[in-house]
Image (tube, rainbow, N blue to C red; front, side):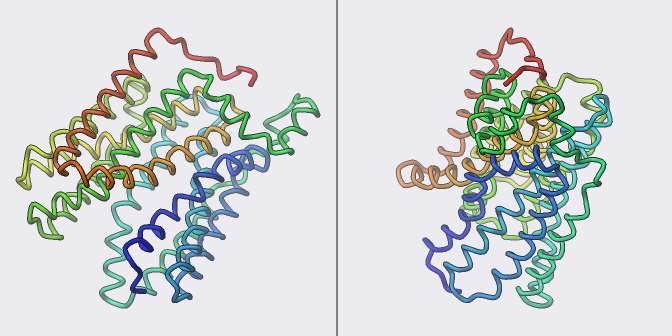
Length: 369
């Protein structure tokens, strides 16, 4: 469409902007209506918006449809995540479902760009959008009815006034009161660190490797193998969470991601960067499952959707702001120094969170919010 760099940036940001504002209401809808309804609506609307986005020739209108597609995809993700966090079996089965959900996301991250490249090179870009829309639409069939109880089941015993306040859309206040849970504050810090590192890995880290003279093929191999490592870590969720504390797994995985990122500017060889991205990928896959598992344990069951929505809002805000902030700083500080600084800042944030969380007792999920 020959859009300006500014227009392209707006279109990319638009995918995350709408979920940043609407994730909490979507999470409240998952609590009231059930996960399946949210997945159905999100997947169908995302598929339709994806198809409509290639029917336009205006770069700004394309951004509008991409914004709706991003909102639909986030709704499907919130519904699916809410479904697994509500798993009645508090044993290993929930961890296995969380691992499968994370594994599916990591496989998509690994295989989606490759499939798109094949379709574009062998057919055209329209074929890639059509396959993407069909894949998103297929998500509508992924959540079983019995795995998505409706709000009437979850809120048994709630007073009429509480139900009325929920219907009156007071979910924002209720969602932010979740921050009163110490573990949920750790979840937010962990989400910010994780998504900030991933956002820069997917953007300015690629620019850094390009400046080193790397070929697109080598860059793609490093990123793809890192995603494969993430999928491997997600696949081991059941085993790891059965033998280790979830909070400790979260700290270890995030520390690994931050340390790997801090080491990036000191090595230029392919094997060294590959090792950094494999460590980063392992931490990425393990931290995602740890965050979801902690959310399931720490959040009252009737507010699982709100908790997922709040975390999704924070994630999307980081995905929008981190590249913009980093891009502004690159004007004044050289890129390798910034990459090192980001890794060290992430480590400092984790150490600070660990110090503030020391001795904090696990808040009961039965807390009356």
